[in-house]
Structures are given as C-alpha cells and as structure tokens.
Amino acid sequence: MLLAVVVGVVGALLAVYAYRAAVAREGVVALVRDLPVGSVVQVGDVREVLLPPGSGLATVPWRDVDGVVGLVVSDGLRAGQVLTPGSVTTEQVPAPGQAVVGLSVEAGRLPATGLRPGDEVLVVLGAGAPPRRAAVVAAGDADLNARRTVDVLVAQADAEELALASAEGRVVIVLIGRG
Image 1 (cartoon, rainbow, N blue to C red):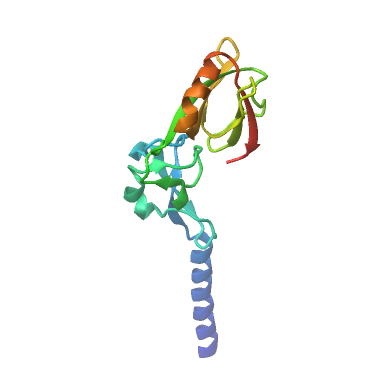
Image 2 (cartoon, rainbow, N blue to C red):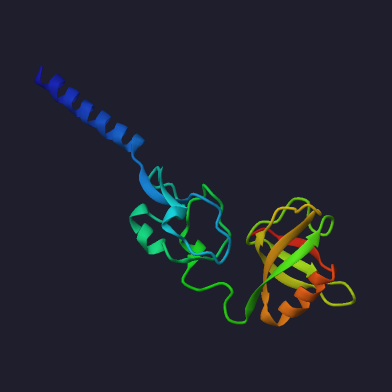
C-alpha cells in the first residue's frame, strides 16, 4: 500500500514537472512596427513575446529591453520580427564616409518583386559610368506617376553622382542579394 502511495506521488510530481516544461515560456523583444536601417529604437517600437526556452534562436531577452531602446537599427527590421543582438548597434547610419541617397526610380527600372531594407543592389547609371554597389535603407510606395523613392546607403564619394543621375532619370536598380 505504501509503495502504491509513493509511486502515485512520484507520478504526480513528474506530471507537474512535464506540464510546466511544456508550457514554460520566456519573454523576448519583438518589434511592433517596421524599422528601417538607421532608425533609433524607441519604447513604443518593441513589445514582449513569449517563446519556448531553448529554441536555439538568437534573441534579446525582455529583461534587457532597456539596453536596446536608444540603439540604432543596423538591419532593416519588420513588424512582428524577434529582435536579434546583431540587428542593433551604437553606431549611427550613415557612418563617416557613407551617405544615404534617395533615388527616384520609375516603374520598370527596379525589380517588380520589391526591395527591402538591407537588400544589396547595383545602381546602374548609364552613360558609360560603372555601376555602384549600395544597400537599401528604405523603399517607398509608388506615387501617382508610378515612381518610387529608394533610399540607398553608398560611399560618400558616390553620393553626388548618384543624386545627379537620379535627378536626370538615368537610374536603374538591380537586386543582387537579399538582406
């Protein structure tokens, strides 16, 4: 009889332990809205989401949220995405020697699949000028004339030429890598 009671108690304790392990969650930092490269993380941009422990994902624990607020986004981030330690930095964008240039591009001169922050692109200028490598910072929606503004991060030495080519309508954007 005593053995049956001991086995019953041990079984109940194991069941409680298994239940707690199955429903255990840890709070991590996730995004409420899209944040382009170079934006500063604000308190209203993040929220806590619960994930199972030991998921193997690189995350920022919710208890460290105060250390994330005020940092600069180094990769384009999307609403609902879990924040990773490498997606924020203390360095400002653009860094010294870099520039962000807004390119006005008409339909048919950029990929129809759309561009996302962090995408690697070639900006083709035409007129025999070599293409310039750039990273997409933000991509706007089409305006009434079917033109889009695409902000790209480039070497500061290339900024003037890209801006002039954009003003003259000589820009074609080629996607070469997803960020």
